[in-house]
Image (tube, rainbow, N blue to C red; front, side, top):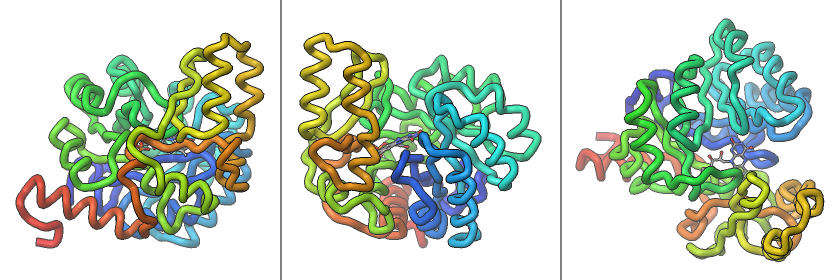
Amino acid sequence: MKTEITELLGIEYPVIQGGMAWVAECHLAAAVSNAGGLGLIAAGGAPAEWVREQIRETKKLTDKPFGVNIMLMNPESEKVAKVIVEEGVKVVTTGAGSPEKYMADWKAAGVKVIPVVASVALAKRMERCGADAVVAEGCEAGGHIGELTTMVLVPQVADAVNIPVIAAGGIADGRGMAAAFMLGAKGIQMGTVFAASKESVIHENYKNSILKAKDIDSRVTGRSTGHPIRVLRNDMARKYLELEKSGAPFEELEQLTLGSLRKAVQEGDTKNGSLMAGQIAGMIKEERTCADIISSTVSEACKLMNGVSANE
Ligand SMILES: Cc1cc2nc3c(=O)[nH]c(=O)nc-3n(C[C@H](O)[C@H](O)[C@H](O)COP(=O)(O)O)c2cc1C
């Protein structure tokens, strides 16, 4: 399946595994890349040396292209930006800020830069500063989100920029992929479905929470603080939303979520952990390999778009 995204990234299918703090490490990234998509290691809030190690481990597990996702508000991001160049990583996706100050170094090193955007204005700014593509992520997605849904964001971004657009948020099968293409996307990024995949190293309690979730089981915390995050409902989300409603100070809210994604991913604490996941969790019913997820998504999308299977 050739699109501007497969050409840009040198991959077989235009399917990117979203960077997911604590979740997207070397095993998941390599599994996705080996299956023909683009795997990403998420730097999240981790030290730059952890990112370096993960890059080196991923290289041992795959000879296909893979990338790194960097959260620019993270104090380590300056160091991670350098590690990316030093280790010869060829693709970087960025969130939570603008990558403008790293652009010259990354470009000089031949790194393809793909910022995640939630608005037309940011997409245009990223194009102006030299981005190779953008991920337009709708608020159906798990984790940090913007205001607009994928349905309205993707076509508006596709109209506004000349670089290829990758759709994210609420996609987990070929119907979603085909829909994204109809909206003007040239590739898709999926997060929640890969977090629940066989190769995902998250605690089985967290994985089971995704597999059991129904369509209406996610909540958005942090709207009042300006940092909305989509999670599955649990004790933590309920407490947070109650505190928010009562006008609790920022510090108190911060305290509640400190280290909460790690608690979910590593300890399997489904009560007090932050179970980040998208609205599409309701459609994800079984743990599948990344290869199965990618091949079924692509062949279903091909059938819907062309009336032929991916292998024909
Ligand atoms: C557990 C989790 C953690 C995430 N962490 C990050 C992150 O560190 N950086 C980032 O850019 N996006 C992050 N995201 C968003 C994903 O990269 C991806 O864009 C999103 O999951 C796509 O929507 P979906 O969940 O509906 O598939 C995260 C998502 C999840 C579910």
